[in-house]
Amino acid sequence: QVQLVESGGGLVQPGGSLTLSCAASGRFFSIYVMGWYRQAAGKQRELVASITSGSSTNYANSVKGRFTISRDNAKNTVYLQMNSLKPEDTAVYYCNAITTLPRYDAWGQGTQVTVSS
Image 1 (cartoon, one colour):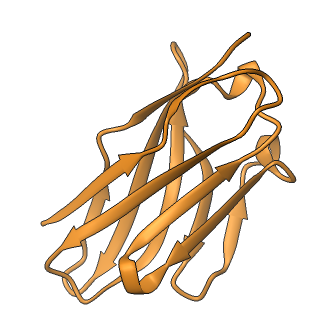
Image 2 (image 1 turned 180 degrees about the vertical axis):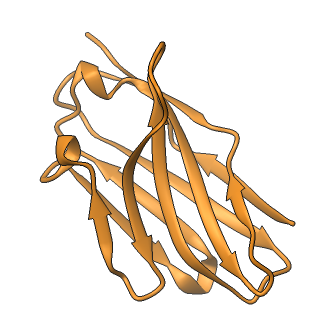
C-alpha cells in the first residue's frame, strides 16, 4: 500500500501564492509519476500538473506560467507552487502517485484551496 499525505492548502486572496506538498510512504520500489489534480464544486476532477521520476512535466493550459510542479525523489515528495492565484483555481486538490514494483495508483485525501477576497 501507498500512503499520500498532503499539506499546504488554505484561503488566499486573488493574486496570492500557495505551496502544496505531498509525501508518499509505503512499500514500493520507486514512484514513476506524481501529480496534482483538482476538483471544483460541481465539476469533474482534472489534471493540474504531473512530473515523472525523470523530471518531465505536464501542465494544464489553465495553470501554465503560474504553477510549478517539482519533486524530491529522495523524500518521495512532490510540490506544487501556485502563483497568481485566481478565484477559478478554487477546488479540492488531490495528490496522485503511480508506483513501480508493485504498481499502485494512489490518491491523497485532498486539500482545499480557496481563492477569494
